[in-house]
Picture 1: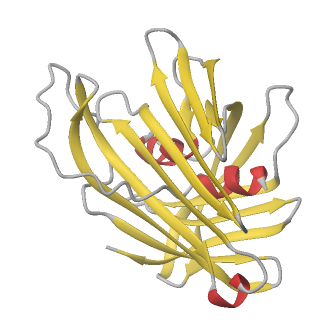
Picture 2: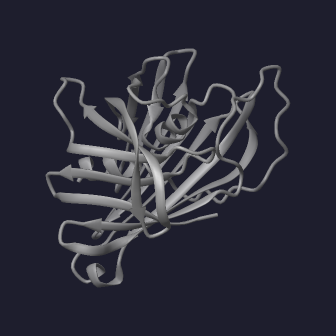
Length: 256
């Protein structure tokens, strides 16, 4: 199930529900980004032979003063469709605080409900120390510090940072990503724009092949790809992943 969360979290995050605050005035300029507070993207989720396995919604909730800078509170929630809930309940909530200057996460959390198993995982990034403080809560609480590279993302912030990157055909980007207290390496190879049909419409998007590897270089998932619209909004319009538990697809239904 970890591989499902890793792949799914590339496009999804959780509703943090925090109050809106005034933006922090920084000496450094904010990075230009293609998203804004209030952006909400809704996806249809399909898995293997289930044409409608659930939904996922991502939201840029607000921009707040945080960590001596300002940060976007980005959130999403996903859950299985009502039919599948009779067989297996899976819901997840993720959130990230994405620094508006560095486009690196300050904090990330993941809450999952798998059947009767409930888990909350929190990662706080300490860039100066080169560490992340990781905590997992189930029926017990486990804490550990993990060593991170300077440009480490969480699984959700990675996709928003990717949207802001200077995408072009033939480009290749690599970034470390932490999920569940484990460091992965994600490589993104940008292909030529192509037409993609999703419930939200027929769009032109870059096809980006994604390779995710663990610390030993072993692949996590196969045939992973994400399509990002090649216009100013850079919406992630589709994601496909071939995983050990089946084929997994997210397709954009609505954007506002």
